[in-house]
Image (tube, rainbow over all chains, first blue to last red; front, side, top):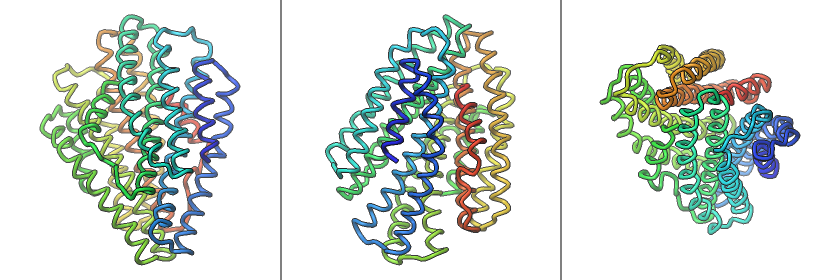
Length: 213
Length: 213
């Protein structure tokens, strides 16, 4: 499941950045498999809870797996949206603000990979490094939004194209958020520390950035 | 938790539609309480799994509660985003496309209420009525998007304001999606039927609408 989703994120981004139509279409083709796997993993996890009644750290592992499975499926959906934007943008000339997308995409992909490695290896330090990257993605996202809004004001005939790019950036930022969720689940699993809502002030500033879209 | 989230959705919408600043600010004030409740409910549910090792329908109830709790917390976050848009739009003149927002908001709020009633009363029929409303929200959303894009092309100086409205509509549509998730969990709970990903074609068309943002 992790490998399929990581690959979907990578291919959708290449679809946008390299205008690679084949990779974008592979993302659409693999969506059904990811959705199917989500159901299978969920059934397996609930079956484990029912039949084995796991305790303590085993219970934490199964509940973490249920949550991470759900985050992965949503990341798969977001990759599909990015791939569809990629296909819509395929024949359009590249507009300047695209230059930030490869950088945001690189950051988001690195967060995805680290979060999943942290889960597989139960590596708390790597999980913390994912949390540290989240602010960088949010800041880049906000800057790109302002740049794209100025672009739209100056080029009203290209608003539709700019909205596709806004959508790509927003979806990359949501993929980064899901990576953060996974990293938080890993910390809970490994250390027993609940770091969700660990900084309400930070969350408030993210929400306010979200509105500037 | 349900009552707090339902009230957050209602108040955030009134913030946009009636330009009611006080209600919008109450949403921001109540966010921390919703986040705190999510953690408490999650802990209680995991405690139940660990100590009681529930079987069959009891196990389905606890796992449904864990998922619904997560959906509710996200709906709380989306209400905060809508309330922040409401505050940003407070002093702007009303632009024409706003007329659709009360209608979409009414549909989304009705889905929220029905999904939560369906859970509390284990009412499969009401849960199905939520699934049926989802397409209506998606269609209205797509129509409003096209209208707002035309508005931006014609009024490039008001792009920022139109983007706030796009954000409100997108967040309402995501609130409707979470209501659908809850209704699906209720059907699984009551009937043992898994209706997630029940119609991949429908999902594909939603994703493609999402890209048109």
